[in-house]
Length: 497
Image (cartoon, rainbow, N blue to C red):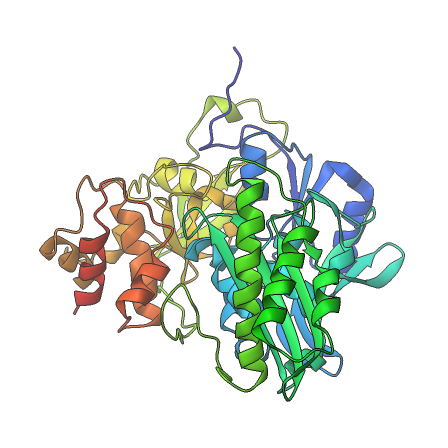
């Protein structure tokens, strides 16, 4: 009997390793070569594996390698670990204060859940022509720290991409850090990032990043970079040359925008047309230059105004810590599924704390957290939806953060604290105030998406107890509701006592 791909499952089997040092990662990548893939956030890799575009024999997780998730100012610039989440970079004070283009790129990045799960290293190593982080890092002059069997080396971000989905990483090499030079944090330097897409959480039709250095009314330095308009993110060097050493004025900006639109090489695809991409590049170049120029003059200093939210977002990074119940972990027998009966790889034992109860479970390396929660534990609140991270119906909280359980390997969640929608209800049966608010404001219609929305909204309220409407809409932008009940949902979240 032929097995058909199901986006809810990972059909293929693979070995799984969690090394604890960079040297061990490099050794595994060297040993397995093209048969291995690095697992960081997994938000793209697991999708590609589900639809069988890639079939690695080995996944090398970075989850236990220390030092890859930090943001640290050093003498040669701001060092960002490759496993640092997009969300962490978006709200890092140093980034928001001095590197506006990068903060705005992270803010425009997909959904809230993907921002929490996705990593900057993964975004770059995917080598998508539509990468949001790449143009911002290019105009900021960032370099990448690579570690490999022959030692360490640095590569400018603009030289890292060799084609769609391709990079200059050599066999056994690993991206470990991103270094942004300090000179772009100068008071008379400004940067900006702009993006246009079909919907707010979609991949870019086109994006643009701008950096300007000014001396009075004169442009002393300039960088322009664009994404989703060529096989790789690219700089518009002719437009840069036109602008540099010139007095900033409207006609100059319009001329530069025209030249930039001629330097790109867009195509027609499912997201846009080449004609539209050239036209929107003109607009984004114009708007980006003006915004960067104002920032280089001291306007909007100190914080980045996040355009899609309409206001300042200063959410804290507070986490939820669900305590255990003091009992011994419960042993849970695995649910037999035909897809795993003939597994070539031994099952692994993991420990999870779910809604305050500790469990020990036997899982296959390709078991997803969503399947374990629903099938092994019969907690069916988290829903199967798209299976590829686009609907957010499967959202649960993992270690206090909203994640897509359809894109989390159960084995990689070992030791984590999970809260599902069932965990919002108190032991006495009393509903959470947020659930009560959803009932009062008729925020649930068919109800299929409601558990995911509740878990996402609960995370928002744990971070920011009094969000504005714009902040609610931004945080929930990835949670799809086919009944189109968004207005009632927003009212329910804001009215929660």
